[in-house]
Amino acid sequence: MAWTIGTSPNSELANRMLMDACATLGDGERPVIHSDRGCHYRWPEWIRICKENKLTRSTGAKGRGPDNAAAEGFFGRLKQEFFHGRDFAGVSRNEFIERLDGYMTWYRDERIKLTFGTSIAKRRRELGLMA
Image (tube, rainbow, N blue to C red; front, side, top):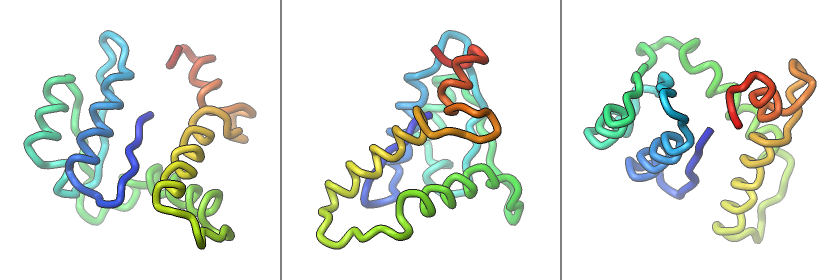
């Protein structure tokens, strides 16, 4: 799992996230990369990174909500657990980004998923999907 945080949803942000994700792949790992139909995921640099890393691109069909269900579910949890009910008055942009990055790390490495009774990272290790 990889993410980037910035103040503008631009192609550099999307490309950096994809390159960071590719850097975590083991030999022979070639996942399907699912994205929405945003222009950042159709530009030549994004496509070049996918081709160089032998990734299969998958773009949801227009008007097909189920294609994005997992991503939308994550953003709902992010808003509920990290954003709603908190006061960010007086928090600088950089501090907000640091807090969000900390939440993302916690979510990936420690948050308990009730279905598994353990963190997502530990479950993936148990299945041999990550070191």
